[in-house]
Amino acid sequence: MAIVSSGFGQSDFKSSKRKPRVLDSSPLLDDEKSHREDGLRPKRLDEYIGQSSLKEVLGIAVKAAIGRGEALDHVLLYGPPGLGKTTMALVLAEELGVRCRIASAPALERPRDIVGLLMNLNPRDLLFIDEIHRLPRVAEELLYPAMEDKRLDLTVGKGISSRLRSLELPPFTFVGATTKAGALSSPLRDRFGLTQRLEFYNFKDLQEIVQRTAGLLDISIFEEACFEIARRSRGTPRIANRLLKRVRDFAAVRGSVHEIDKSLVVEALKLHRVDNLGLDESDRRFLEFIVDVHSGGPVGLDTLAAALGEDSVTLESVVEPYLLQVGFLKRTPRGRVVTPTGRLHMGLKKIS
Ligand code: ADE
Figure 1 (cartoon, rainbow, N blue to C red):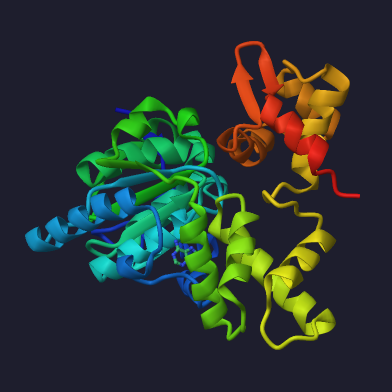
Figure 2: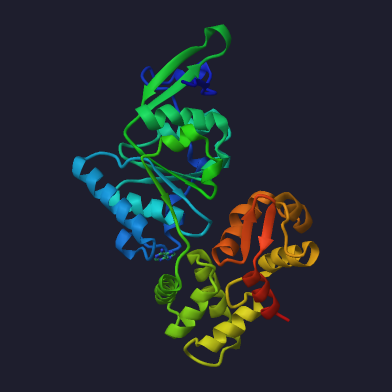
């Protein structure tokens, strides 16, 4: 068992005999309200479009947990950015009727940061931590006994007078999200009762999401225009909603018709250099570099990162997943290779 110093000195314990005083953790907490109040996120499972197997698995787990009057088991959500991991955590809290506390892993630098979060939980609360592959080691080690035994192991004081104190935590649900499940340590990965991958959305689901968002934003748009946005959204709701807003701007300034149609979408997204499959400048630079400079590959990730001025983690977890999904890129042991389909798309679809 790893015992990690809490970072609390003896003086932190003066105010209470039973419990260490915990510093206010609010600066670390992302505001749950601000996450909910963009007004566009679905609130309940039945409003959440797509990800049918994820919804089914979590729906059953939620019902069972409620039936037993217990906290939901810890959940690991992984997959490319923008697919709805935070949204799902908020939906789970809503379904469970509990608070959702939200934090980002890299912000939990000092032991007291994670201690503050854990000690401020109410029974059955949901604690959502994003980017858990970037969780500092000390936070991770404090989480192990918290997840497994609802126990917080603190070392109090310094030097020879230091003592171990274990505190009991209320039952809670930890939801961890990551774009890089492979980068998690196995002790952390093993402590999740439910591990679920979020998949890219199909066009039909994305079209429905665009229609739903258009309704919420009071945007008049034809169904086939929604489909055109969906087609260019890289399987990602966050991108679909962003493109819809750019199309809305374009329509407001340049459009002459009341209801947004397909040709207006095409025109607006041409301005933003998004092609008919949703590839943008960074995708094209990525593919072009491999084709033009390395005759289609293979090229190592670090070479690509250095040449394109991006970091390799971003390339691997943000740029590449969609290119792999549409079959434009292959990962081989010797590096990245652009496929014949990828070449064809590039040749045909260069935006002038
Ligand atoms: N908005 C963004 N993602 C969504 C989803 N999966 N379902 C409904 N609305 C959304």
